[in-house]
Image 1 (tube, one colour):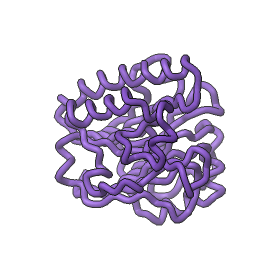
Image 2 (image 1 turned 90 degrees about the vertical axis):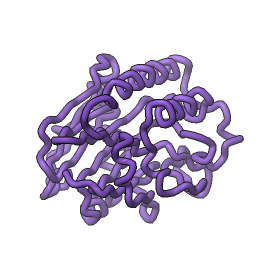
Image 3 (image 1 turned 180 degrees about the vertical axis):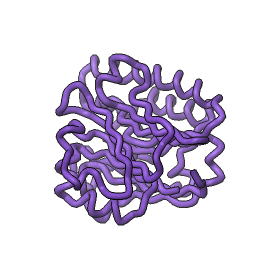
Image 4 (image 1 turned 30 degrees about the horizontal axis):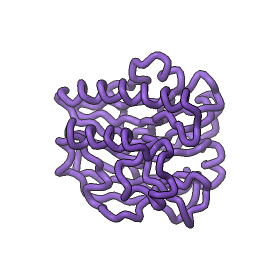
Length: 255
């Protein structure tokens, strides 16, 4: 099972830069895209509906913000849009495809990068609710893959310039503690880190210049039962489709 996750910063612009040409060649079972900055009715071109995939979209109320999509080769048993967090669901942040024994989620977490206190509080509220949700679903008899732009690092190995980004939202000690609790407390697994511990692997460049200031904020977080099935992971950097690079993860798992 191959899953590709990508934060587009606007799917129309990413498409112009060749994202769909590239991703269709990767033969993924799932393509999870965040931050579409477009709504489903704006994406009627065949380019956005590639053959062999069943696409599902969850729009934000504001058509120029956020939005997520998941492309599935196999028809899911159910699609879940939102997390039941009313204010946040209006922002188009989460979509999930459910199969017999596994769920694939696509997440766009709130950002407070260089933002005001209200945005930071908004982000903190989301992750408090999300932690409760992840605590509940880990007791279900199914596996989970939740991939996307989490808008936070796990530790300083995920930053090219820890000193220069100290105190910036996404790198805060309390955010790193939240990730620690997710992995060490709730038992979820950072799939990419299971197969690559290098401290120079980044997925986001805030200023768009990939020569410096890289962050790893895009993650595929999986339930503990999937840990033995993680086979391969890579961050694709040969082409630039947005300020984020796509993540490719392979699992020894059959739907």
